[in-house]
Amino acid sequence: MKKYIFGLTLLIALTIYSFAGVRVGQQAPDFNLPDIFTGKTYTMKDFKGKVVLLNLWASWCTGCQAEMPEFYKLQKELQGKDFIIVAVSVDNNKEKAVKFLKEVEEKTGIQTPFIVVWDEKKGLAKIYRPRGMPSSYLIDKNGKLKKIFIGSFTSENIGMLKSAIKNALGE
Image (tube, rainbow, N blue to C red):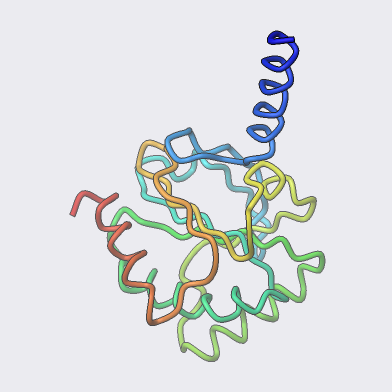
């Protein structure tokens, strides 16, 4: 009976663990996705030596809509540092995502200052298994996942993110 209970407990734990997605401390999963504007393909290896904020978003997501202008300002503020935002659109329709980004450019007066890739088949989203939309993942210069942020950033709470980025940059 003890073996049965132990086996069942182990099976349940492994099942939960397998659905957990990425975890802090692990190497950030690689990807091979096209830039939404140019079609140029990017992989995680392209950002080696940089702190990366990987953001999973969609144009239909209200939290994503609220935080995207903050990301434009953040990337501009940290220009010249070893930091890059990689925004991963999981939109079904690439044109809707591009239209949304153009609207953010108009609203902020800033041309999209970071890389935006399109995850048409939701492959990266399936690997990361975000617990909510938007979800952001702070990755250090060695490609290790440092922090996971579920939900959107606003002007009121983005200081928490800036602090985590500066810590990852060694500042």
